[in-house]
Length: 494
Image 1: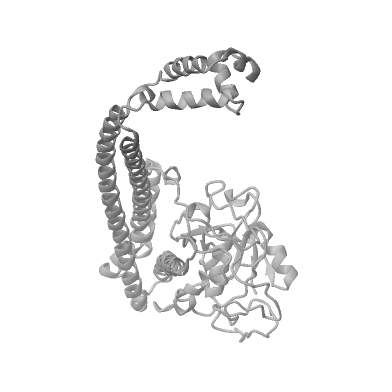
Image 2: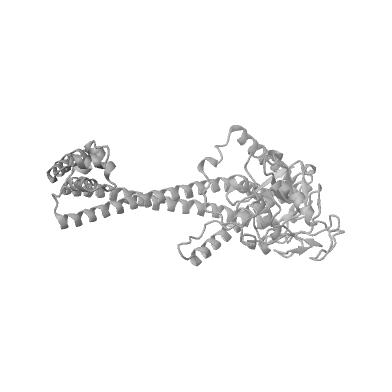
């Protein structure tokens, strides 16, 4: 059996906060410090051990076919995750560079406006006009007449109140002397004591510097955007290669004669299929973002993230391209997305009005996407109301792709078992392909407050389970994991 990574996740990686109010989630880039650290020696050793296990399972398989399986496994397990990290980092750097460029442009614009305003003043009253003297003189006159500038002039003249100040200013000559003294004291800062000519020269010098900085920042932003685009293209190329290899392997499964070789190939292909969901979600998000930007009015900006409250927003990307799923040791299905039945014998036909009966149901099911009632009970489905990129968000999407019922307000991850049971869903401790796997708060290293949910994609011969899942740290991406404690969990079926 392939020694896949154990289900010990970083605490809080998938905090499945199932808010029940529809809400638009703003575009948030994953912080750079969330990126995985450089692999340690033990990580590299484990990776080599997994590769060795896989190769041993493929003993006796034609070398060219075995090489394809090993290569696809490396693509999905190592190359694509590394490319994802590089593309995300490049995108973050591009966004930061763009923000710096916009800030520099704003500073330049402000300086140019200052210059324009000052030139207008020079045109009106000359370049030698003393703005500081005039401003403080006006304060003195206002204070002399009892305006709200009294406090300012009290500081200048030492008067405690307006009456004291007026008594000390018995004539216009006294006011004039106060004006001169106050203006002299107030003109202590260089920027203030400059006459208009000097200030204009200083602003022009500042504009030249800001212009150079703005040009540099704009060039940096352009280069960063180009780098991000290149990294994204590299990631897409790797995924396209993975899709092609998976399709080829699916067509060559008849050449795999041993049970261990078949299972090894199917697990590798399923891992690749789970990664392919990310392409579907990314394409749907791009389409949704473009649609929102086109329809945005009154300054409303289209989000680059899908709205968590829109009905079947991301789930609509599933359909026939949801990927081939299998249970037990059955085939993973065709590359076009066909999914095999949970059992080739004794499987009963299920429709939207049928009553749940044991474990005999097909995957995908027969519950139309978005159904509010099927399998003899209310589904509680009114659209994907879960926050973007949470585990509950993905569980809703994937169940829709598999034509299985799902509710919109089942709560946090740990709540799904009880919430689904109250609606009439079959919930037990027996895993089945397509079922929602429920994690208690803190179970297997997940959130100690919210718990977690994942979707069962495959049941392996050793009893381990391959699941697909999402979480906040993955920023809308889908990941796979292999779990070895299947009986310790609840499963929401239909």
